[in-house]
Each structure stands twice: as structure tokens, then as C-alpha cells.
Image (cartoon, rainbow, N blue to C red; front, top):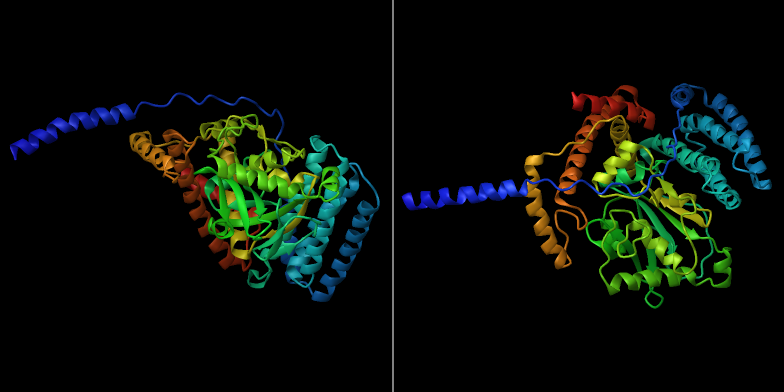
Length: 493
């Protein structure tokens, strides 16, 4: 017994010394190497959103005949505005675009209250979306005016459509929305009931907290956090997804693996068939997809946490599609992404990001070279997406106002052991508890960030449940945002 006690007493100082050694903090992050110098887009339309909700409640109790009379007038105006934009090439600051947007907003409460016009409303939205994409071919997509116009229309109209969909009885709607059958000469396959072609880009929103950060931390907060390049084998017609994951770098996934990796929504985008390079060689999308597919097979490409477009040795998800097409002369992301809020820049820098003029998944939607082919989201994942976004928006608001996300520094030695274990697994081409390109400290930061989001989200979901029980309808996004702010404040007390 005395011998055992002596052995234990001799080991304790070694364990303590090891623990203290592992407690030595990392050096400071290298800091951002580039700053955007722009201003984040802000809607600043709280009065409008609240007014639309009041209109929805009024319309729910209005006689259906009166409601239809109002909707006929709004539809006539909508058709007139759409016709004008379709008949003319217009600059991005033409008043018709604001007219289209706010008339669309004003129709949403009436459509949501009646339900009968949902199909027309969605069809009109897709018609306008296609036209805006065509108009934007003639705009300077890096100008503030053009960026604001296309963002307000594509993001704003999608938001209105989704509020209408979520008020559908039992939230029942077709999860697949077909938008444009852009011609393609490449092999095709089917994913989620949608016909896709080799070379298509699948822009999606994952279910992880970091996905919400990627989609919302941009100067133009979006709906998407990930990009995958579709490759369809010419002989077998089996589709594969070439994508970069923070856990394992650039990898090839089967459709089954892609679906298993939780997705809240996705959108299929395809290069326009009338692009000059595709007119000369319609096979470029297949060549680009095949090029990146074989590149991913030939060697391990780590994930690029720095989001450095100049670094060709590592890639983040947007780079996979970008570099594939760049190899054949097509430069995607004509509207480059920016992250400008200083404290959000600092937060992302703590996760390893160093470049803030880069390519974000959501901004690919605004590239005039690409057509939107289809979107997928079902009712449950759509509502979850809204809740995740609202909580993330509130966390980012507070970050911008000086609130810090603190880690439990006493857990650093254990995080370092987990990192060491992860490195061994990475050498065997397996995933570890700490992502490949992330340090132990960054892993702890990520854990603290996820915990904060989860705690605020749980409180927010409780408030949403009470709201539905009390009011009899699903709260719109701006109400979820209010609940998330209340939940954050309660958590912080």
C-alpha cells in the first residue's frame, strides 16, 4: 500500500507539470492580411416588417372576396413592373427595382392569409429572379449600387416567399422549387428529385453552428454556407460531390454521403450556356468538374482556414468550384465577398481566418454568369434555418458591440491532447475531434461559440412555442429576432 502511494505521489508532480506546460497559451493570431473597407448592408426597415405582420393579421380576418379584390390590384401592378424590367435594359439604380421589391413585400401578407395565390406568388418570384440575373449581366457587380440592388431583390424576395410558405396549412409545400432549365451538354443525374449536370454548383446551408456563422458573417448576410462541385461520370452517370470540409480538407462524396451530412437547404447553379467560352466549348463544365475530381483523388488538399485566394496548397469550399472553372478561363464570383465589421473580423480571425476580401458561398448567387436552376428546402429545415440565422444574427450584433466569446482556459490542456489525437487520425485519413487546420485554442473557441448558440437557441425555441400557442401562427423572422435578443440578454445576465 505504501509503495502504491509512493508511486502515485511521484506521478502527481509529473502530471501537474505536464498540465501546466499544456496551459501555455498560443501566440496571438497573425491577424487579418486584408480588410474590406466597405460597409455592411443594413435593411433598417423594422417599421415595414411590423406593418406587414399587422396587415397579415388583418387580412386573415378579412372577407375572402375583399382580399381577392385587393390582390388583383397588387398583381396588376406587379405585372406592370415586371413587364417594364423585362422589356428594357435598366441600370441598377432604376426606380423600377425598388418598385418591384416593395410591391412584392406588400402582396406577401395578403397571399399568406389567403393561400390560394401561393403558386402564382412563387412563379412571379422566379420570373423576376431570372430577369434580374439577366439584367445584372450588364452591371458592374463590384459597385455598391449593383450589389445592393441584386441583394435586396434576390435575398429580399426569397425571404418574403419563405414567410408565405411557412404560413401554409401544416407548412405543407413541395420542397423542390424549379426555376430555370439552363441548357447543358454535360452528363446528368438526379439529386433530391432535381436533375443536375456535371459542372453544376451545389450551394447549401449546413446544420452546424459554424455554417450559420459563414452564411451570416458576410457584409451581405445570406442563406448559404457551403459550395460543392458536381461531377457526373460520363460512363456510369454516377454523380459525385467534390467539396472542402473543415474536418478533412478537399474530399469526394457520394450523393448518399452528401445527403447524410445535414443540409437545411440547397440551391443548384449552372453556368449560362451563352457564355462565350461555353459557346465555343460546351464541354467546359464537365472538364472543370473532372479536373477537380482527379485533383482531389491525386493528393490530400487541406482546408484553407485563412480563406487565402492566393494559396494554392489549401482550399476552402468556394475555392473548389472557383479553381476548377478558373483552370478553363471562367472566373466566378464577379461580386467579390467582403467582411468589414472590425469586431466580427477579429472574431473570425480567432478561428484562423486572415482574409476578408474573399469568396463566400452566399455571394455566388449574385454572379451573372450563373443561372439558378432549382432550390430545395422542406418546411421543418426551413424553419430551423430561420431560427439558427436569427440566433447567429444576435450573437454577431453583440460581437459587433464589443461582447466577447470567452473560452474555459482550464480546458486547454485537454484540448491539446484532443488535438494530438486528431493529428494521428488525420495521418490515417480519418477525422479527429479537432478539425485538421484548427489549433487546440481555436477548437475551444469553436466549442464555446457552439455552446453559446445552443443555449440562446433553446431559450428562443421556447419563446417561439409560446408565441405560436398564444397567437396561432408561426412568428415571422423579425419576431424570431426579437425573441433571440431577449434570450441572449437573459443568458448574459
